[in-house]
Image (cartoon, rainbow, N blue to C red; front, side, top):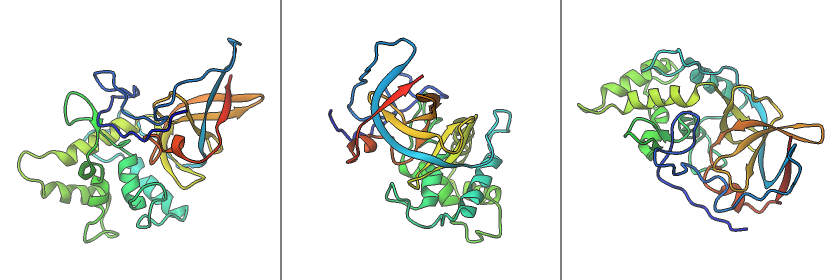
Length: 248
């Protein structure tokens, strides 16, 4: 098994995790290849690694019919829920060299910039931290997020549209997804039907972490996820055991 930490520069659209040139946006499984270990067509047995277990799915799932140009109201709810869970947003995020607020800022756009060009791509650091920057408002705690973003937008130079791009990317990325808190302290986005207790794993050869649910004699496949700090091969490089996942 090869271990490769390989962040890449380009990314995809909607639910497809590839860019317009069919290049993967993420490399959650590094340079590993898929290894199937079953001849039974009713099941799929794959090698991979566990990342974490979902301990809390935060309330709210973003709908497509919400107006553009605004931060989805669910994002503000998620910030408050994280505080209720005892998360200090100014504290260090355990899986990246940044604050928890910065991690949320990048998670709700899946670390993407979906409007920079005709090809969706990974966000640069400044764009990814737009929420974090907005929350450095001098009246933080006394004004809402809408006001914080509006005040930040007023500081943009003529021709810039970074704030609008960020807000629209957030809506597009979070649509039909929920925000989750992992047992290991990580943040992520998962399909709307994800539940507390579901597992996040990296399957060898896969581009993203996956949500699976334990059932009798194996696991049910729930869908793709974004798990901040585990999108570029980190789980594969970790000194943890390789598991076999029986998907039914």
